Image 1 (spheres, rainbow over the protein chains, first blue to last red):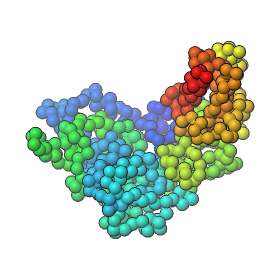
Image 2 (image 1 turned 30 degrees about the horizontal axis):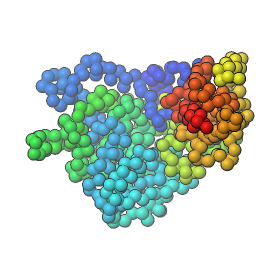
Image 3 (image 1 turned 90 degrees about the vertical axis):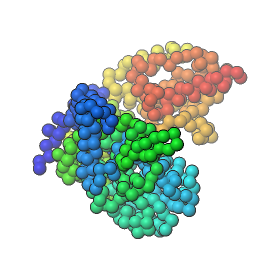
Image 4 (image 1 turned 135 degrees about the vertical axis):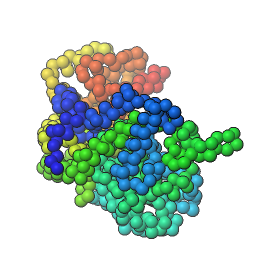
Length: 405
Length: 138
């Protein structure tokens, strides 16, 4: 298939705007992706034409809304190749999903148990476990990373033992873009009987994991990373785990019978979906998945890889520019610094040229500590970016450096 | 010179620039000429909380007037800090407390001083005023 970049860009209204008088060059896609018109329209279509509360109405419009909401769950199920649709819990996003699992394991684990977290984790993937450990006394162990930004799997092997109950790892690091060998990590964890939760927030805009093939116990992502809206995401959990875990929040929808003595919880997935959910968000999430599948995740990945190669080569030609995280296996993220210049100064001037990048620690202070730096400039590319935009990044960066030197 | 007069003077200087690049180049120059904080005061206790680049601020009272010094890892932050120092340094605590830092909009630096921007500069003004409160009873 021909990747028609011009046609694709026309789907994203925001890409037409100007910032500080310059064409908007959006290279902060790892923070959040932009949204195609199809996704944006699906939200207003819902509110204009069939807004109703779901699962409880006897009227037609409520049924339409329920069908669309549950239809989105099926789209997510198919996209990630999940066996049963009730293994997909719709959450507000990755952070919510991780807290849901941490809360579930709060009661399942105790001080004799251990969990392992990768050293590439985002804050949101560390804090819930620390909070859990503070309450049930579980011991937390960390898999360190090497200078390329890869996880040290030899050390991982030595951390695993019969006390290990859970392993948490992101599929792709948000700060460096490293793709972790999750298949290997999952298999090794399963060998000692531990469950694995994979944070797929940074991965799912770039490739399509087959969750049955991976045999992962939990997998989560946020819709806004893959062209969907904010405030909606999904948690996949193997049925046996979701049955075992207690509900996270109490409220409507998650109960089947309530008396003052006892409440019987609803079946999956509703047990974990208390209250009126983000209906329009879920529907739009489904539309975003359709959009990506229409382009083809493989085509997206191929295009982004060539863009990454182009950008890496171009940036490397700049004197004193150092790239952090040069794993062989990474997504389209370039984290870098210019010697003697603070990332914040670069980011501020790039913004004046209309180029949006992220600067700072990327919520991943442990990784920054590992490299002994206080932060980086991070340019993260998406399938709607172009070589021309990389050229603008390059020339703006050169001008910023000359202003700052 | 009074605080408002200094602010007006800075606005005048910035009005000479034709585009943002000249403005930023000037700010970067200002950053290089900042009244640098003494090494012995460049300690964590004098850090202004802000997530992007470290910014240190110190103040001392001499003959009833406050003299500030500062430093930052980022040169643009340092440039803006230099502007703040020029406005508030060598003033009495009560003048500092009764002043408003309102001209900054006119020189197009508002974006750096928005409370939602994570660069600690709003906190810097706040901290300068705290020093003024602390010294007003001395």
